[in-house]
Length: 166
Image (cartoon, rainbow, N blue to C red):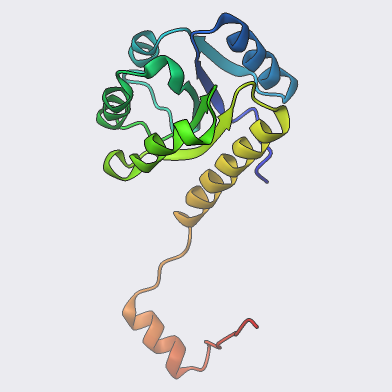
């Protein structure tokens, strides 16, 4: 569980060609096969437009979006991006935190923020976290629902019991 690299699509948005190749290589070593890389945001947005991206993780270099961070995140929200957003930056969490704080107005699923160069172990941890969340959401939609009448019947018949955890 949480270990399904073939199910997850990866979109990398990174303007540094070395970092782009490094990230692509790391994903390949981790077993992710569906990796698409872009060196600019507008091209990535165009590619994503109209696609179903539920099981997609976008790795986004915030340093290349200095002026347009809010606009880019707003566009993701407008396009109903439901995948995970993994933020990376040369300056680390302090640089990323203000954008992560903007999560609420845009309601995006920010799964982490990592300092470049990205360590493979931390990358895998973020992807596993995303996968587990997605599996839990998918599993919760298949839970059985009961009507009020059925609950009353179960209570009267003594079919329900409370279980308490310490």
